[in-house]
Amino acid sequence: MIYELRHYVPTPGRESDILSRFENYTFDIFNELGFKVLDFWIETGGSRHLWYVLEWQSVEELESKWNVFRTNSKWLEVKSKTEANGPIVENVESIRLKRLGGTWEKSAEG
Image (tube, rainbow, N blue to C red):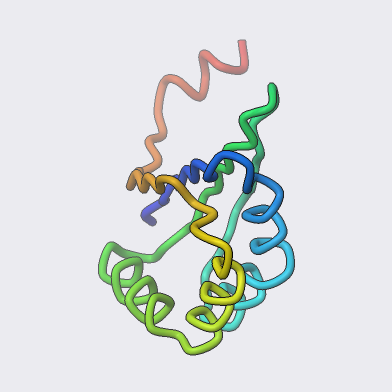
């Protein structure tokens, strides 16, 4: 398994717009395309940065599904509609992770 940690920095003043886009559109498109979202967070303290983790079978699946998403007609329509007054995302960071097992699991319990 490959995990992808994604971090979205909203454009100042557009914080509620990006959260609304995820809640009302993006997650539905993710589901239609077979994206597996494991968890989703919003930073406390006013920044409203968004963080979420996706699970993938392989790097090839990750890259393939993101390519499909980026050209998806529903997504392109939603992006155009939600950014009619300008961009709502200032920056996106994607970090690929591999889960490790081992001694840390034992030490975390005790």
